[in-house]
Image (cartoon, rainbow, N blue to C red; front, side):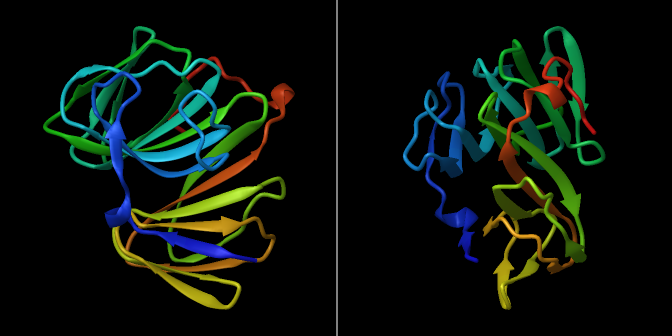
Length: 203
């Protein structure tokens, strides 16, 4: 089993697909893939102004506000406010989506998977233990509110805020210790019969 820490300070920022902001890739598969060819992609985006989001046909997305007061996402005419109390929304990259900042810039975590080959799950975790789902092929833990220690394969990996730990799939319990919450991301093979890609959800 292997694990690798990806430091937030080391991320390289590049323009959004539509040129309206910047994004920093945390990890993507295949390695070196583009916006048009990735199977899955995890990134951090800085949003400093209102405007449209890039279209990603055939992609399922989850956006989580990790810094700032929040944003309203208009997804096909339905408005979803995201803030510290309700920071997450999953929606289709096919949908026409625009953002309106609630009060100043934000930073968000984006998880995107290409429909067909992959799907993803995200959840918030705290100190204790985490168990990955049996079908998980890759997993990531992102420190959200404060420093986090993750024990994996008898090694303690220390994360500062917004650092990411990339994990091999395992069915071992993963001990977690931190002062706040972290975000657990799981990538798995897609099962089209079990998914509904049409309706955004914040749960």
